[in-house]
Length: 94
Length: 218
Image (cartoon, one colour):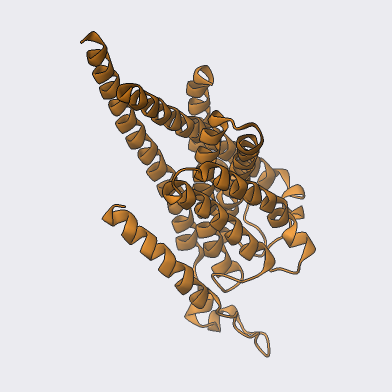
């Protein structure tokens, strides 16, 4: 097992335990009365645009990253296939 | 499939190039506003994940009952895609939920069952990587369990009380929202098909290498 895979595995296991702890947060309790939007705390006026941009960026990064990964692995495998075929052909000639 | 690959790749690229314009011109949802636009990539990513889970499960069944090695390669490719598309859904969902519900995550039936289904496919990949000889059949059984989760995850919002929108949302979309959604769904399913073909090719090349190494040893 390579060091990178070990680190990734360790991070994954830690995430499995840590994420639920953060995710268990409960939604804030409802207000006693109606509150004008202008007097809401900053957290409630959360702008939507950064969330939308991050969501689309995540999707594009995952698609492009995965495409690069397949491309890379396929190129390496095809190089190895050509190399083994050459060695096999050389062995048969002898 | 080889002849279809390039046209499908071009169609997929064209759909993804057009998708941002279709999403931009789709109207804002009345209660959620701009953040609802995450829906146009979030739901199609789960549709692609379900496709991957079903393909993986069916290929796994062929491995168990018919001992097909080519099906094993398809199952392995589909499991990896299930993890990738599932990760897209699991990351984009909380970004939408933070604005719409006020929290990143809720341990309700839909979100938890979707996470469990994704973990099943992560387990499949870990088993394939570190399971050693004979892990094909064990992981094929895991693939069947993963596929069996699909209807539970899909109908969970209709059966249990949950903060997540129901499945009827998609069926009742107005054309101005429905057409961009359909376009994005087709784009994601096309992307899934293209990636599956490329990933299966990688497995086929690896299988050829293994065969050649065996010939070299002989």
